[in-house]
Length: 83
Image 1: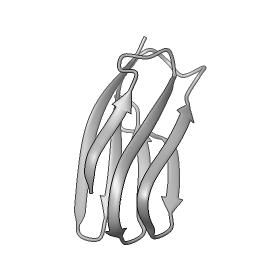
Image 2: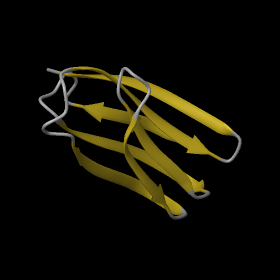
Image 3: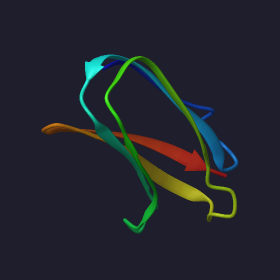
Image 4: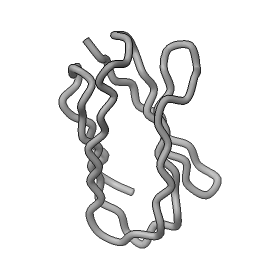
């Protein structure tokens, strides 16, 4: 995986996740609130090329959220702020 982007950050509850993948196995995209509660999850089938997902968390409390990408044996975490 390369060029992982999450924008805009901070945001009002809507943001986009985009990345370029090279023959990546299935992965899972998850979002957790600052209490560690999972508020979004999406399994993604094997992809090669660009991946882009618009996530809508409108109505969620303002705060810091953790965006987690789970690949085979690897977890990547990024932080976003909902205002």
